[in-house]
Image (cartoon, rainbow, N blue to C red; front, side, top):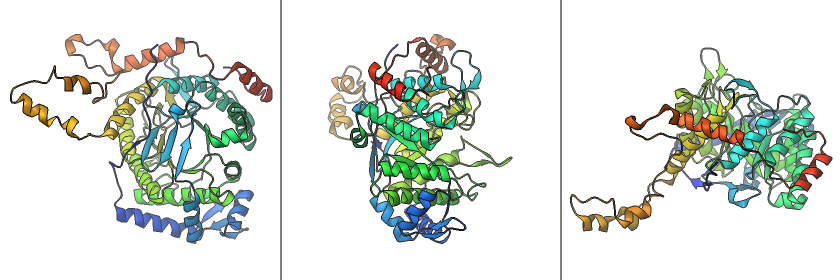
Length: 485
């Protein structure tokens, strides 16, 4: 099976700006005011005390924490403006800063479309490994955020070690994941230190990062708060995302949702900096809109892409790295709806300059399900997004003015050296799309058929291991709860 060429991540973009400059300033000021006057409910004792010590106004009875504007501004200033998601192969490093764009998986779906039967089923640990392998090979997916849940593991303390081990064993790219328990989090950090060759080596080039959560509306709960504080103390990259939904956990308006996003994730950054100044905090944008007929969460609405693009502007305003969301769909199968919802969302959020766009490959059914053929198709969509971000380069060579004058009217350019020199790098050439004329078209070579064939070949290929055998033995001796796949 052909190994796809890696596409260099980190193209800059500011092509889509849904907020005016005045709108950005208004939202920023409103976020400071909300945190100062209303604040957050904080149920983690460590978080509560850290914020109190850093200058927040606290009420122990109600667990309310109010943040003076100067405190939040100081946290923004001390949070790194650039965070590198290192990979064990440096070629795959993702540098989150300014308006540089990277793509990855995510969602922790609880179902997959089985690559053999085509039936929807519960995801398992083997799916973690297969997704990691595929992401390792797909050229436009830069980071592996663990995207499926191992339903066969019921003890929360055992979930994290199993997911991260099989992810790290099957991809060289950076591995990011949500955390299910403090014990599991500590175990993953220790495991990563073993792989890195020590605590210092991991802190110098962390190839794992972690996602906690600010719970909308305006709540830091006990578990996520404690884990966030632990990761800040360990000086490891931690994402503090928020998931406000229009009309349920946030105001119905897009502006109200963006304000909620901004205030909540700034509270998370302030918590990280209150625990450990300079720790690599990453703000997060995961919210969405509602189905107005039943107020359910939607994954594929165009307004979701607009919200996340607007939050991208806010993150760039504050100069804080951003973990964003794009590419999701409400489709129940890999169909036309999945294609247009994913394409529109992916392109808009990428054009906004969001630093790391997770969920952008493979997800459908409002983030509940991963489809392997969609993962491959989405990789091609991301290749098209990358071409858009490259833009149109204008210089003497690309303008070809002298060549046009030399050729004169009626002459073609087919055999020109200029054509040969630029033909391979000027255009995005899809691997899946069928561009044959109708008389040569075969339904067995449609884009979807080609994606499914690619997945089938993957399933037929022995998985192998990326971690050294002795290291795997040491890790599994230290963590006997790790299961085979």
